Image (tube, one colour):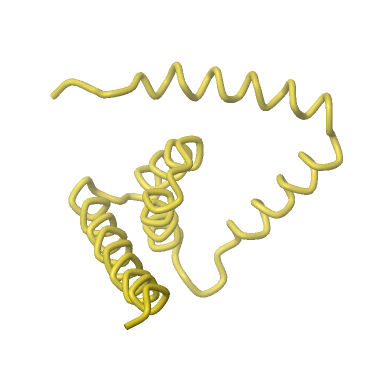
Length: 112
């Protein structure tokens, strides 16, 4: 299987750009880091479940940096390729459902 993207190179470049942005707007990056840290604290869900949810959401939001980070974290928490694929299936179904619902709104906008 060949990769579509070199994720290690992407991650390294993203981290470098993140350091640049942090130098330009340190308070924002500090706040984002605090928010991310607070969201990562497991209270009721185990780490693997939380990361599978995050992976599914990244497929919908199309944030490649988030995708990279949460796939790595999901694998570190013990998620298998099959579990990640199942979580992605939920994301695909929900995206289709959202599109279906919005299609109904479009039809409302068209009128009768």
